[in-house]
Image (cartoon, one colour):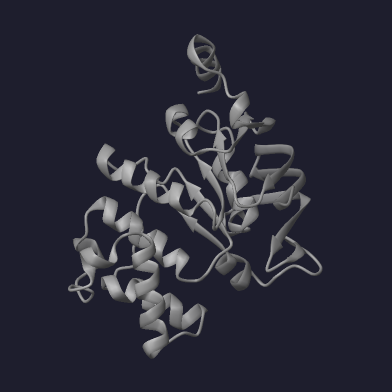
Length: 252
């Protein structure tokens, strides 16, 4: 099996608080891996270890090593031989809990990153924007109002716009930090359907607090307890029925 990310002895602290404790894990390529655990168990911090976003926070201290498979080449995540952060974060897209569109028009939310990061402008940029918006099912909804503020969109549309912004930069890995937690049920299900449709083209690592959502989407499940990785389970090994209730009571 090919792994998109391998982490070894990853430990992360912020100030005196230890968040991750010697985590060792291999995430499969072209699969959806769902990170499960209580609030504060280190799920988001583990995601941010992959695109090195933890380094942006005050008090950060990190140890351990990791490798990432991008463009057919295995790279160290940090240190000698690692990719520049701009390239790493282009190839490893991230979508957060709450939609965070840029305070710009709908169109410029896609066109600006394309110009600044991918150096795609003019017709090339517009074509890439359309492709990304089509990929998230948003093009028909917004094609006649691309000059309107992104804030005029509904919450679900804003989250799809944020996902389109990431996809426009042609990532290979997607990090999704509870992407439906701030949305209503209808909008959340639409995001789930979108994630399901992307699973064969991208390696997806996703944080969720919902076991039912995890079942619907996940191929593998990484279980975290107080910063310790308890295991990586395939979908076939996730408990069902009364056993699942006990599992969730202990986990969440």
